[in-house]
Image 1 (tube, rainbow, N blue to C red):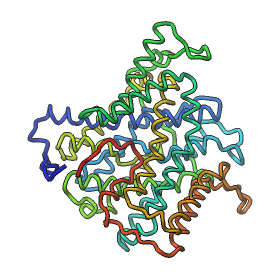
Image 2: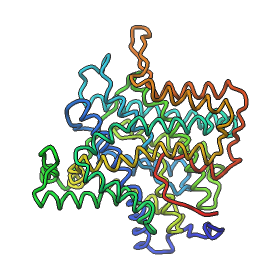
Image 3: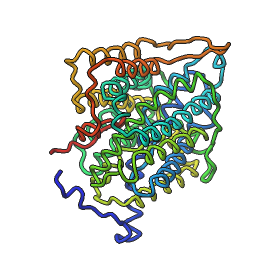
Image 4: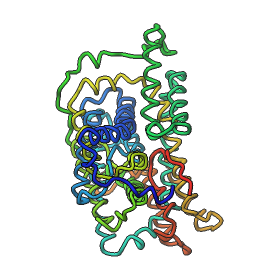
Length: 468
């Protein structure tokens, strides 16, 4: 794209209220598929591990409320200047999966709801780490901080996040491979050949079209290969039209904190990448004004507040940056309208009931793509930042991260002061990578030297193939 990218509308009020509302709906649709997918996946992790359904927290309604409120909190902290929407973070899926499968210490025999509450406690602490990074950046500058978190560290960590979840995708997809393949195929088609808005919402289109196919199959009397019904509409009929989301106050335990908190490293790099991408799209340097420290605080506060009431971590959404590119309307007011719409939807239980009928095979097909794309984005992180893997130091760092991230399947458990603590594979990988990067000579990463590479550090499906 040329310079005309930045010649957009910066005050949407001159378009009139109807067009502003329509633009807000457009932004809501952009974030919707990915945002609701996270609680559906997480609920599946806990249900499978604990043999029951989650009844509080980690629901679609709570997630939509947290996304809307989190976005408004972020805009407040960033002085209402940054046109960013905050939705559910994919980066923390591996952490939720790990907590769901913890069975030692206090987690032995623990129910799904309580485990979810402890996982959300870890999310709260992860959000607070944003404040620490923001303070350090304010004191010493972003370039010095980023030398300790270069792509050779964060890229392999993101790759491990995706690969660690691959088994879950296969397990869900195998319940009805036909539906899974339909969902996967639709996402691929829209992501590669889709035009305009449809290219930005491949996940949502995959879910909608695969669900329509499931409805037709169910109406024709077809079943899953194991004989179970493809769809069960009981949740829709029992849900009311208006209701308060089922919030759940989080709980804290050191083990769950050590599971979730290190993932903030990847999430914070995603935030910095998204701020770089939004700045490039809009033509304003948001890293300088309102400042990276303020946007980090906004994202961290939104994440902590979400975890506090039983929601997933929030993150700035690249999908909505795509809408900015498409619409050329850069006014943050439009994003805030989308946030209000998300909050309103969270108070409609009937809507959440429809989503809860989603066949697990469709979720498997979507996550088949999602988990693979997370790992591929980690590779893209390394490639677009031009990490030189002919250097022994870089190969050593990446290799150690891979072995730690994929090899310590059960984590590392030890006892301190009579308390059992478990370091997960991802935490071990993050610690090892950061330490090796700090110790080994030859670190040549400079943040800002390769702006295009700095923009490619987000954990979401990339939709835009810009040509320079």
